[in-house]
Amino acid sequence: MGAGNGLPRAIHDLEQEFAGLADEIPESPEKRAISLLHGIVMEMWRSLGHGPGGGDGRLADVAELYRTAPPMEAPAVSEPLAPGSEAPDFALLDGSGHTVRLSDLRGRPVVLVFYPLDWSPGCSQQLDLYQQELDEFRRRGAELVAISVDSLYSHGAWAAVRGLTFPLLADFHPKGEVARAYSVWRDRDGFSDRALYVVDPDGTIRYGHVTPYLHHVPDIYELLEAVDQVAGVHA
Amino acid sequence: MRTTAPSTTTVPLTVYGRRWCAISQMIRRYLDRMGIPYQYVDLDRHPEVDRQLSWVTGGRVRTPIVQLDGQLLVQPSVQELARALSRTGVR
Image (tube, each protein chain N blue to C red):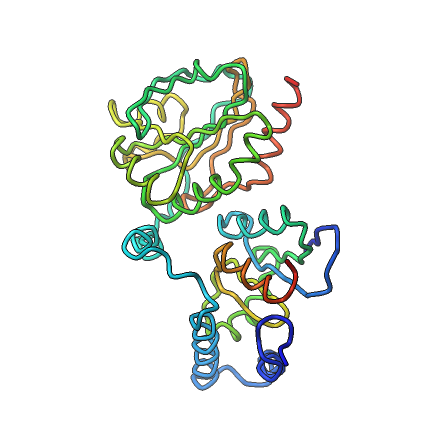
């Protein structure tokens, strides 16, 4: 009989017993080896048809490249523009070659997502999160656009691989001009800090946030609350 | 630690995550949306849990770690978690 979670009862009971042994074995290479073996068994169980699906071969492999890509973990260097400031207008190309102007998005809340680089670890996960939550932004009547210094061709390929359907805008030439206007430019690196702005339907910044470290992804609960406040004020 | 409501199942489900971790956020938002109750343990606020997690994962404490009725999933995708929940009968 199973234990209700896909694990046979015997394995389930053994798991419980194993977990309870942690404090009884002194720290040692042997303890480390036993722990590693348990980790191996756990992952083998996942891989036996219980883990992540097979995906679609090479494309799925490309989508997973970020997991082994070099990390990006430096502290932030910028402070966001203050709430109440007018949001600087911009006209940038998206991954399809269409021009997106902030001023064309008047009349609804706009979430501006500044991220360092396409294909990088934190950015892949952050934009996956926004894709998953896209209906939540739409339900609030908000538009979400993401901006980095990558070219429109990189944006197009990256969006296709990750299944991103919101606009990725190319702050490509002059490089980082919009990130500079929004005070989130990292001159030493040639890309922006990881930052968010919520712009109200009249074009005024109501929320700004720069993550303290590049690998930190902003709290989605806090972001949705900020959008709620802007949407509520203008409801 | 916090627990979401409403409670509709007795299967113990714990998410060990970090507030700034995107995958932790994806897993939590998914569970919220599905109305599946869970205990959330933020490892930045509860570093004492690290030792036990390290023991059972072979030292691979990568967030999120989802504990579902005894089974541990290290950095599961939402799809993998959905399959695991389905096997438990949660959804």
